[in-house]
Length: 138
Image: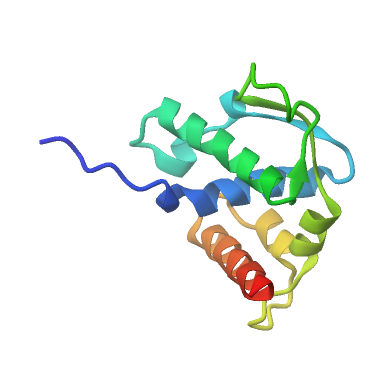
């Protein structure tokens, strides 16, 4: 019996956390985000690596489209796995420096840096951050 495929949303928070943690740790220096360098086993050991790499790349593009990150080769469709010169935007940095509305003592960025990116705590921090952003847009 084939296993049930999990939804992309099941992995989205972990991938957002992974990407933002990499960029927050490097700020203000641009870095290359490379899907082939990500260990997807920590995120989804039982999933197809190709599917996870595609989803991770789509998450990078989503973060850029929403204005939280930018990268140098945004208009180059030839390589959808490497995002050269990636850096947080001012908007992305402000988001990571926010504190949860639930009175956390550390910012979202600090929580991500001090947490295993594949942990439930990291997922929770990203989910709270995204919920708070959505609330601010309403």
